[in-house]
Length: 299
Image (cartoon, rainbow, N blue to C red; front, side):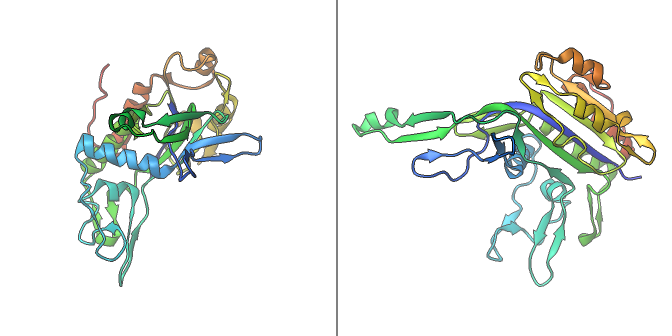
């Protein structure tokens, strides 16, 4: 039976993704909801960019994979998923007389703020540089928003390392290694933006390895002040597939001191451990699926 690993994470960060803006104002990417509030977000493309960046920095993922030979930037024809973890996990499209397309095996959502944006701005100048030349400083304004954000990732374990376009099926050891690296990246995720490095390490994470592909907890994480609402999470775990409740596959990772209702979270949700324990359990579950050996790292 095919398996899917999916989890929803919560992290705290500031001003993660800017749009084009206007005049001397840089605007955050954001949207309006029916509750009358505005929420900022980091696009899934931005999160993907940092995953691939860290894949290259930490594990040497090959980024010499694109060209503009056909007029548009795309992956090189001669490269396959054997050569590129990025192409394997996030898919590709190669145009030509015979276009080749392979869907992503790893799918990301936007990272959406859980707290509304209230119009905070930051005033900037380049006075330090301008004064060296006796020039008048240039002025700029950027929108600022510090918030908890949530995103969801879904990984089709059955399709990782498999590409019918080139009749490729990687070894289970290589497939496991790629997902292991991805999980390590997500556990230590960061974003470099405007001279800052924002820590996107999860403070809370809920998910597991399931017998059906569905991002169960996407849109289910909500805050009420510093409290994490648990009712929608509990209800979601009651979903069944093939006569099995999703609760039995679900694990939870929590960083102590993040939410004021930590006791209620511990009481309502199953198998609550640290974030590190959650990721170790996910890696072990992936190893079991691919039938490769893996020993949980002892803290």
